[in-house]
Length: 269
Image (cartoon, rainbow, N blue to C red; front, side):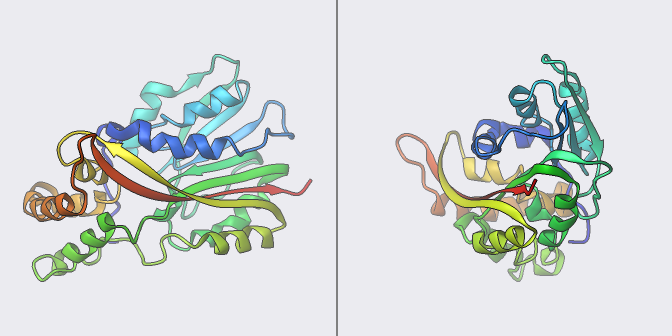
């Protein structure tokens, strides 16, 4: 990918409820910190901060830092979520790139929500992050596992078509953007962690016209939109037509199956 994608917080948040659900499910399996008091927590790839605030709800006294490499997302997070929390903790945000981020201090929890699929060879970073955990601390993440779904297959087909390949073939993510659940289990247990890995397929019932296109405009389509800029409408027309056939509306909305992979790894005490 030649250029980092430009992010649109407003577009991303259009499906905030559906996007937050996997984070809530991940958080339900994370044990309470047993190290520092107050707990120190890092949210790696915090986006606009809308799910980072859920960490403060769970651990009201914690000092939580959300890290992201998108200025647009961080502006949203700074504006709407930064500052003291109701329970006496603090929520702040800082620029960091998960490809190179080295924890500046020890943490009781490092958590990442739908971010690591953007980080090539992200499993190679696990050792540094686990090393930064307090004894008994936890590294937890979830990543999308839907790269073989019609939404992504159709996107690849159009990007690599004769019309677009010369301009767009470099924009999409690497083939191994997400590992298998078994591979994550092997990586994390190999670092001495007690590890729980699972997968879930959500059946999101989306409303409105072309809702799957609207969804991917906030995430997977961002590199293409960044590359094409004001010239994107012709590409979107092709992609819109393909998505309408793959995800026909029903009487109650458009069903969008979405597989996700989860991992919770707790460092030995």
